[in-house]
Image (cartoon, rainbow, N blue to C red; front, top):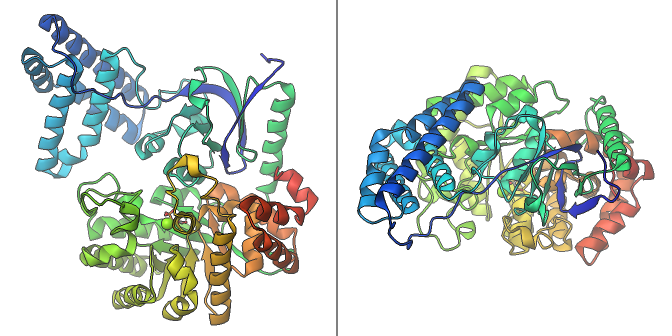
Length: 564
Ligand code: PEP
Ligand code: MG
């Protein structure tokens, strides 16, 4: 069915894909006010709690029965927790003591979680599942929709306020046509993971969460639009874009400008599964393996054995192609229970990334040893780089530790302005550098990358950010050191031309973005890219910089990639 006057919502697109489908809303975890009055009828409150636990247990079990593999196991284990008589007994006792039913549930589960955490190991790993039982039972008691992404009975567009990394990881990929997020920014985790999986995604779409379940929407990541009740024109446009993108995917040549200047096109990955998924994709390797994904959601670091196995899987999947492994980047937006310092007031400015070497050098050494073992086992030589390096001393320190652990090709990320400003010294200490434009924008613009409402300041087209990228690229060229870009900006075809013109030697991005970037690069000579870079850096504002660059882009490229 079509409506004559489609309503259009706007946000920031991730990737260039598009899709039409019905909305499936994910709901946030309910908040529990701790000062609720005691129940008037204790027996009724206990019966309600019991009924809610039973309903949640039944629902989870039904989902487990329909799911397969790990998802089925996780759901089954969570269902068992919801049916645990000891937990329910605790809730009853608290209600008898005067707690409102939702408060009793919240406190009983918090107490269980604390016990599990104290026990460590397997039990501690289950705390996330316990919390998900709490959220579901509280929602049931309050008559709210079930939190998290619902079970998808048909291919759908998932709409959420934001998705926790765990929600995104549990998505049934074959049924997710697109993701629309009301909050969160384009360099937040949901956006990055969606890009990784090649799912069209639009973030910061004000009004998205008021969309009703089942309503048809057309999501266009290239233009950042969500059309509610799309008419036939919009549907055809989406279809045409899908066809055009599919045609671009046929080109598997290595990245190069029209006149043959090579710029390696690489993929960003977070897991061994990601590596296996791109084994057949036309990328020249991996430019950023975010290893912290392996550490997230755990209560202790993975052992050297566990890590070596994962790294070996990645190297094997890439079969001889280049792989850049980034050492653990924990802290700030990626907190880890066992290393993040409690009570940091400004975690983004605190002990994070390579700085963890100050408090937990063994963590880094274990990781480097595991990488060394994977290299020896597979006969592949990964490049290894450290995140969040701010000074030439830190670059030298990392290089020394990495070489001591047997790494041959050592690099650092340039994602702190101080490192970019002194790139000419940094490149002397290492074999390569990689620009992390997500954090470089965050720190240059003093803007939290997770604050969706400040997305205009975080824009990598901000001239100040472009200047720092240009300084780094120039330093690399002068020192004969490769300079890659592995932030999300590399996935923007117009920015990719700018970066190439500045002298960047490789671009690493979510695999789904590679085809568009390859196409754009292949349609412009190096000299044109240099002119595009000059035009961009001459801009005084982010808007001016992008517009000036775009004006010099080949019209056919603009049209096929919907660049505006
Ligand atoms: C970056 O900061 O640009 C980057 C690539 O690293 P991450 O997004 O993982 O912080
Ligand atoms: Mg970073």
